[in-house]
Image (cartoon, one colour):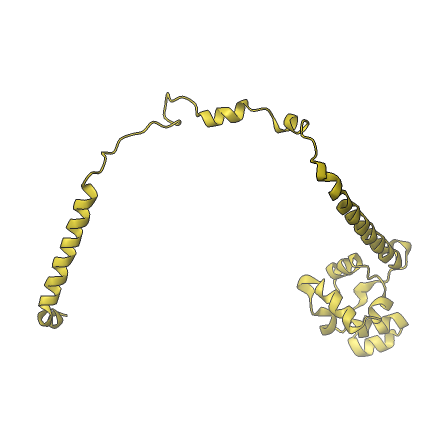
Length: 189
């Protein structure tokens, strides 16, 4: 470092002089014509009058009383059709949901199987599957690859368990009542 300064001392002196000149120029320019700092009163100062802006909000009538006087614009009738379209679409969705719910077996009617007998299906998964409408071994045994993907996407943290634990194969054994085949393949129930 010392050798570099000795070799380039002229450049260092020149850079220092330019830096001092720029600093002096900025300082002199900043103090020229500047107004002296003074305290301007604020509404938060002790003894100051309340802010007029806030008082206007306080004195204004409430929005509830003002909304009673508002009349709908003349083109409001043109938008009435949009509401009807939305209502029909909502009704269609409700009917589809009711039809889907009717096609599910009712676990309260005693038709539900003990899904906990499937290896890898714990109590939380049983409840989750029941909320998705899956209550019978026959349902799981009949899943296609698309069904597995659809259900798997709804399992959250348990995603991937259907294929990894062979739920469909286990359900086929249990749905047919083949406990010997099940135990030979998956172990004791």
